Every structure is written in structure tokens, then in C-alpha cells.
Image (cartoon, rainbow, N blue to C red; front, side, top):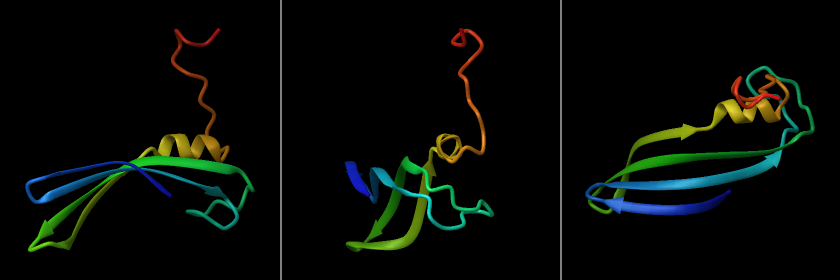
Length: 82
């Protein structure tokens, strides 16, 4: 996992990340594919008195992950498909 950006304001810290790996174990009922995957997302942490409170929000590009695992086929929007 790599951190692409960190932004802090007030009591929140935003982290934009990229994680890479290989699908070698079961994931949400999907048997391992051996596919190389990359997931991007944002995590937001709340900080109180210099410590993470345990409050965390995570947004990941799950649609792209399922595409990489072969669960869905995405060909683009109708005006993008030739």
C-alpha cells in the first residue's frame, strides 16, 4: 500500500492510497483468481488530542476491483464503445 496524498484540516486527516496485490485467497465468496489487482481509495480519520479516535470512513473503487477480478465486464459507456 502506498500513500498518494495526506491532507489534514481541523480534526480530520484524509489519506488517498493505492494498494496492489495478488488475489490468492477467498474474497467475499470469490475463489482465488491469481489476478494482480490495484485498489485506490480514500480513508478519513478523526483525530482528538493527537490520537485517532477509531472513527474512520473508507471509500474504495470496488467496481474497478470487481472488474480486475473478472466478476463483471465493463466495456465503457455506450458512446465510448466502438
